[in-house]
Length: 337
Ligand code: PEP
Ligand code: MN
Image (cartoon, rainbow, N blue to C red; front, side, top):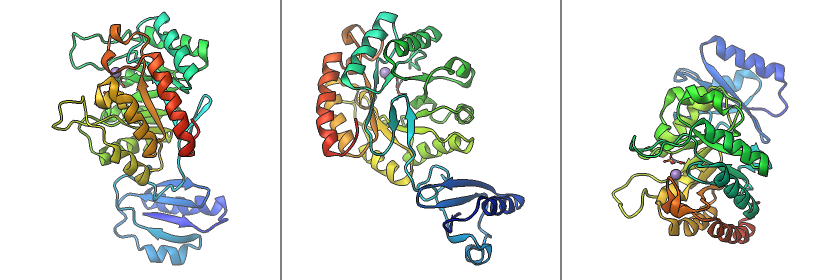
């Protein structure tokens, strides 16, 4: 249940209102927006008489039941778009933020080369995997903590903030200097990990699971936000369907629905969605057109020799071409790129 407060209510009255609900055993979320302030009640609200609260509290303009299970990430509770500042970028409505880099960090030379080239083309963040979740234990697993250190070298060289994937909560100390923590598709419902990153003061890039619904993705974001971290970027990266010609099936309708249902920014990863290099640029244009807040693209300096996901990686020239196209289209969409 969410209560929209009258304009200009004092903080003291809001605190008192919140305390009265917490005394009755409810948890609350206070959401301060540009249009209004709202208090959301969490718990069994079946017996709460909404009209009675509106009439007696003195500070509530109107109330509404939130039927969805996700509350903190729900646009009904928090109507303003969440904006996430990272480095020179602000991820969220009004911008189209491109995050680029290799599937895996392989060497200093490789990551610096990629970082310099994607920066020159207009990427705002550098992404590289240090710990890789691979289907086979015999596949390249990433270079681990050394990879994170090389990413930080690339940050020093270019100024680009870093995104990298965490595999479990024991790795959190290693990610202290990493700007954005990625939770990969396979970990989308690792609830202990979600709770642990929820306690950090650092943006989290949460990818949709291979076989998870839009609602499940929102519930996973809810896990993070209910621990106190509201800096969450949702990422659509394709889902498993009967189709075998692409690695996954890119669900563009999820982007629109997520933006309607939640206030969180939504980006798309066309590289893992398709697994096919030649599909990445055409779909990236669709991603911009459909209203996403950004893109996560795999770029490798030498895709033919990449240790992981070379077949879906753009080379720096192809990435530069894509960025030129996106920049032209971003003006039509009134987005900053
Ligand atoms: C990745 O981003 O490198 C990755 C492994 O993607 P996903 O978790 O979407 O499969
Ligand atoms: Mn990859």
